[in-house]
Image (tube, rainbow, N blue to C red; front, top):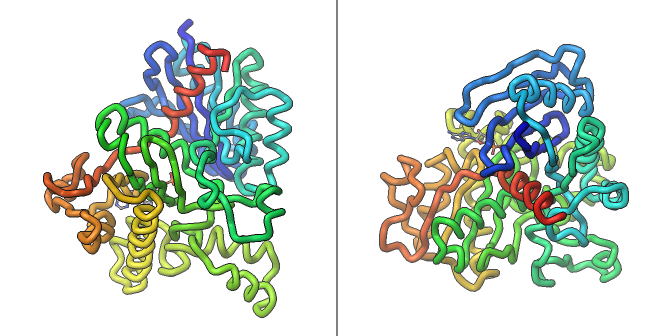
Length: 392
Ligand code: ADP
């Protein structure tokens, strides 16, 4: 038997998982259970992307526990030699206490459940994944890795809102999210570009969810996301930065209730809401409808505004890193973000950008612009391996 780490990323209707051999931390498989609660499907692929298993779960996959059992069955069938010694979980919220991964026991889990009101759309699903993994692997160590942890040591001015102080004490703070992705990018910079890692880097994680982070010397100092994952950039279906007066107007004048406003801000806004066409950047780029162009223009404008803001927060800028599905794949978005930013020292190399090279700025540019594919699963697997080594 070879000992392995399983990573689990349980979202509202999907479960992403990956299997890593602890020896050398090589990724052996990645998988996805999609449409949990509906017509759930499962796919398992090896490290090269070759499909190992693909199945319709039919009645199975009705809930997260079933989805996880199906995922584990598929892994066990494909890797009969794999003993899972540790399970690493992506948990969206670690509150004010957790600034690093932690071993899960009943007390820690109770503390994380108490944070559910801070992230009602994500935290319960993440914790359902923990319950399922504890039942499936009672002997394995369970480790939580938080999306908030990388940002937890922000300076006060980037941790606070201008509200009465009591709300700060109650935990109404700027937590920031996508921390596992930013931690991966910081580790890649440390490995491949130590000079930039030591400097001031703005990272744009542009996927369905999108945010930006200012990293100085490998540590997060500012995030565009705040108390929830709604703030900052417009996203596939989320609004991004919004005057809180709009929420009051929707409540008091339009007569919407909290549930309707939540549905609008999380599921019907952003690229989808503005374009009326799609939340998917590929569909918008392919569309000839002027509303698609306007939605893209708003997206790239907000990225540029936040980039200027992060440069101010970091007191300068040495590098910009694009990551996430859009950041890694869309040369158009990178161009539309970078072209008007020459004043900040950004000078894109059109050929390198079109070729999706790792460095896409011209050789003598003051700011290095890079494209680095993110890998949140690897960050979770590293934390899981460390927890076993160090007692965690
Ligand atoms: P998630 O936040 O769900 O992990 P991803 O990081 O996978 O999302 O990013 C999904 C987004 O990336 C979608 O908007 C998709 O259209 C976009 N995307 C993927 N490939 C391309 C591409 N070649 N060009 C433009 N956008 C792309």
